[in-house]
Length: 122
Image 1 (tube, rainbow, N blue to C red):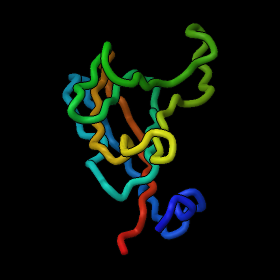
Image 2 (cartoon, rainbow, N blue to C red; image 1 turned 135 degrees about the vertical axis):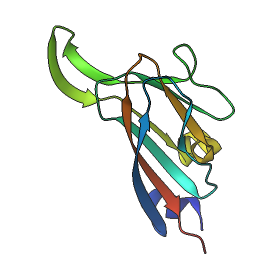
Image 3 (cartoon, one colour; image 1 turned 90 degrees about the vertical axis):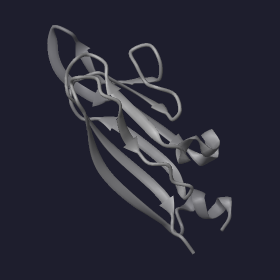
């Protein structure tokens, strides 16, 4: 296995999951640590604000990566696209392999879609 296998997606698999961050702001595991993960993408699928961070950091309104829907104008709720976080092993090293946690930061339920790419175990 070499970096070229990772770049071309050879011998890799994908997992797509959904995670809900509750309105109470409870710390929620978004993904477990995985030494075989090569890419992690996290998308918000509803118009709510949340924060994510790798363990041992604790995400909050002031710490972590803020994730939320993007709107053209606050008075006109037209959906443009969801803000996403994408972390890969080539650009971010082992940050994509860590456990990531999340919280809702505005008192509403946040729905996240998680796409993980990982190397198949030999």
